[in-house]
Image 1 (cartoon, rainbow, N blue to C red):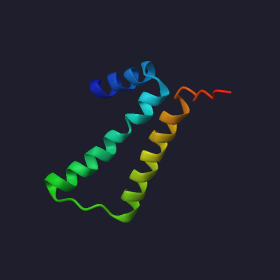
Image 2 (cartoon, one colour; image 1 turned 30 degrees about the vertical axis):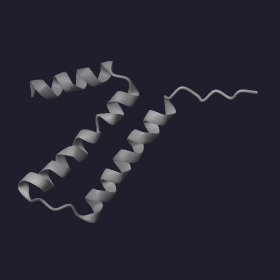
Image 3 (cartoon, rainbow, N blue to C red; image 1 turned 180 degrees about the vertical axis):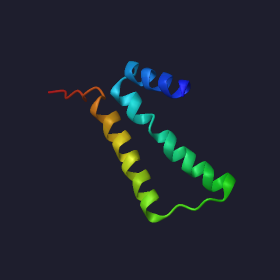
Image 4 (cartoon, rainbow, N blue to C red; image 1 turned 180 degrees about the horizontal axis):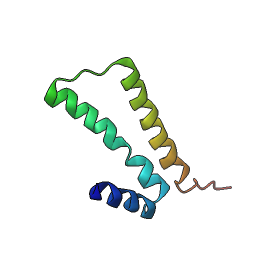
Length: 71
């Protein structure tokens, strides 16, 4: 219980981008379960992983410095 509470408090201190990218941990766990424990991933789980990855990429791109346009 204590590590969970510490994790919640840590997320409050992180930026939104870091917290979103931290959700990729779930995908890494699923991939490792496939590799080490022989688990299988169905279509809904793969689709959920794609949604999480897309969200992390969008969050990262939204906080990126804007490209400079030389005129």
